[in-house]
Image (cartoon, rainbow, N blue to C red):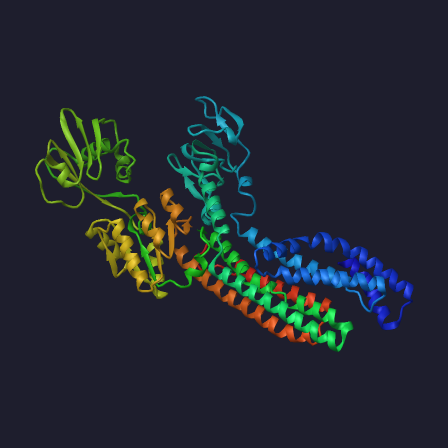
Length: 616
């Protein structure tokens, strides 16, 4: 473009002040040489897209773009050969260059919205330190691809963790901002879980590998991102349809303009028609929505909410009701021992806890984790888990049971709160567990209510527990002992009345309702199947991320309307000026490109807006 422009300066000067015919022909020929690779190499993507669209009987903005480039180029070639009035090789080159700049910025925005800044594979180190023997410091460097589940590895301070795993030795701080958006490093000790792609910041950690390659959490997130990128939101589809209609109208208007000027001033008909095609190219209209949605998705990820479905940003601005599951969503999902009630003489608190811990040893149930700190050398025999009831075992000739009261006792009795520990059918202790609220739950729920959303709690837990949580969070609408089918019926009933519903959950039993909700959010620690069926993944487990997401969606909607308004207004104003012959092709190229760049820059403001208070 710069080379053709340099020659064009001499041609424009010559047309104003005079130039010898042989020099004019020479400069035009030089311009022709410079413009030819632009037309037949740089602009090829426009021709390919236009041809694909025409084959499928669709009109896209690349159709008038291709027409303008080719008509201007071949008309300039003819003017060069026949010594015609004007050539516009500079306009062709400028138009192509500026349009490609706009496309580049759009693609850059889309790539930045991908997970992190680059290929996910680059976030994983190529090698790892595999532990060879009993000596934890005796390691060998091996390719990460050779690691297997169960291997033990050493991650030094400052290194990126190459796989998912569990810490079996060492204490350190791990930067998980890549996954959660949380800038504060998280303490890791023996028993802690770590994820591939996070960074060990302080001290060495010895890990037992639990997942590698495509099975890691990082790869699962990557697949969700790819799924989101393949979906086209309704707003983008509408904008594409509007652009298609607009392209058809532009082609009709261009034909009418050419016919008019051919009858009144034939020598200007082609150039004025080119100006109409160029200045009204609906690039800005086509870019208005997708660039803003892409920027919004990128911002949401940085706030800890990974969007995996294309409709989320649009739908977040249309919600009326937010429904929460309880366990693992409003609460941490990790029951803790709250109270021990001794029911017989001859047993103390420590003995009761040791018996319960022995029964729960080896169990992966969340309740078992509450007793894990109290385990000792006591070993139960014939331990057996009874689904939905409790566990049983024997020790020193006595049978022990821990679970619901009607399971633990020999005789049928009224079900009571807490876990009952029995010996030979006689109750000896009762344990009361509490699932603590997430630190962010109270503030997040209050803020949602202040924004005017109806907040509801749907849980399969006991009535007393659900009421306690609802009272603590001041939630007026709460339902207990609700089955997955009943949850689904509730959500569908709200939707039947026209309400838009967000569901926030984490368990396998939440999958049906997550699939049915208008927007569904799975917690970062949710079951894999729940994450797969949800529209978003709250990586940070910070419920304040929901309010931040709604603020970002509202800002994105405002920017989309600003972009659409500008794009439509620009085309409405520019068309009559171009049709009247007041806009030469080079000015039309500048105006069209600046309009597209303005739309892109306005959308990218979403990435630069300051985070609200409390954002990561």
